[in-house]
Each structure stands twice: as structure tokens, then as C-alpha cells.
Amino acid sequence: MKMFKKVICSVLIAVSLLTPKLSEGQKSESVMGGGQKVVISKIENDSVQEYSSTIDLTDNRKQLIMAGQNYQTNYGIYAKIDMAKSSMGEGYKTLKNVEFEIVNYKPTYFIGIDSIIVSTTRALDGLTFKIYTRALSDKTTFSLTENELKNIHFENGSYLHSERILNPMFPKINESGFPVLLNDGRIACKPDNGRAFDFEFFYKDGRLVVRKEDYDKEDMNKVYNNEIASTLPGKRCSSSFNKIIF
Image 1 (cartoon, helix red, strand yellow):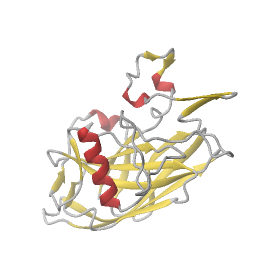
Image 2 (image 1 turned 60 degrees about the vertical axis):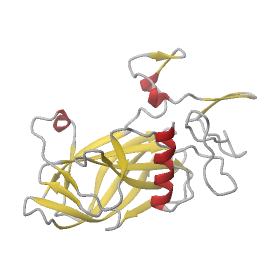
Image 3 (image 1 turned 135 degrees about the vertical axis):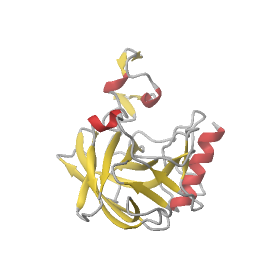
Image 4 (image 1 turned 45 degrees about the horizontal axis):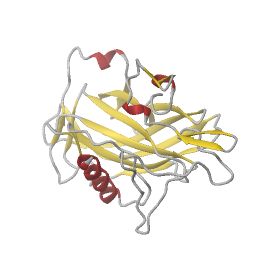
């Protein structure tokens, strides 16, 4: 719990936003900051090579990094990447600027981007774009500048990992403008605003309204409360790997 709150606070300060961040602290990951040198090296015979896409750092088009589904809405998240020369030599490149955009296909609720942070492993040998999305968000774009991407070096043929985290539609905010956290680390939220119902986070049957469990913590091969965890919120298209080429 202490680690979870520490990561949440770091995220809020780093991106200077008042929108809630739904994140679970991992002992193997930390929020990028302080100019640490991060080197993502090529890994031979890795299983992610079998199921991955490719990002060409010589191409500044908007490239698909992830597809997802929430609220019966299919969407894609794209990134336009500007690169720079690396101090480590010709076999490496650094990221100078990344512009993200989410595109909704056949939506029920339009899904936007609350924020994106750069998270690295404790060993500083891997990197994840943590993309926080939310239905009815007004933002469809988000930019990471050279300040957030400082001192990150990709070897040609290495992999970029992206993780999508869904924020509740109607979070509860305290007087200081920060999200209210429950004892289990989840963000406190309301089921509706009188016009739209958050059915990713709540069940509703007549007047009965029940919040759903955090299925991301459940074993996908087990049944939880008579429901299969892999078919419930959070498990659909939440992670992607993209091979870096230049």
C-alpha cells in the first residue's frame, strides 16, 4: 500500500495534472525522472517477438502502438515520434518528442487520454509508456517532451512496451483537486452523472448498484465470483510490444 501511494503521488507531480491516475505500484518499476540513463537493449529469442508490431524511428507518421476495447468501444492509440542521435553510438537512438493520439472506432462512449507517464524498471533496462485512458475525457492527444524522455537510449531491434490503464468515468476528487483513494488503493468513483452509467466499473440492476472488483489482480485462468476474469474489465488489450527499427 505504501509503495502504491508513493507511485501515485510521483505520477501526479510528474505530469502536473489533477486527473486521477489508476496505477498499481510494482517493485520492479519506477516513474522516470532525475535524468537516469535508461538503455533498452536488443533481446534475442524473446517470446514478445512472436506477437508484436514495429515502430520505425526514421518515420514521423502517426504509428499504431496499441489497440483496445472498453465500454464496447474499439479504439487505437497512435504515436508520432521524433528521434535524436544517441551518445552511445550509431546503433542507438534517443526519443526527443512523442505525440500520442487516440482514435475511437464505432464508440458507445468516446474514450480520451487522461495522461501518459514514462516508467522504467529498477535496473534501468526497460521502459513502459503507461497510458491512462478515460471515457468522456475531453483530451484525445497527449505529448511527452524531451524533459520526460531525457537520457533514454534504444538499441536497434529492442522493444518498446506500452500499457493501457483505464480510469473510472466519474472519479471522486477531494478539496485539493486530487483523487480520493479507497483502502485497497482503487480510486473512489461514482457510478453515473445522471446521464451516463459507468458499466466498466459498476453493475446496475434497477436500483441496485454494485462496484465491480479489480479484475486486474485476479488470475485470468480462475473464476472469480462465478465470473471468468479474462472476460471482465481491464484484461482486454491492455499491453503491447513494438519492435524498434531505424
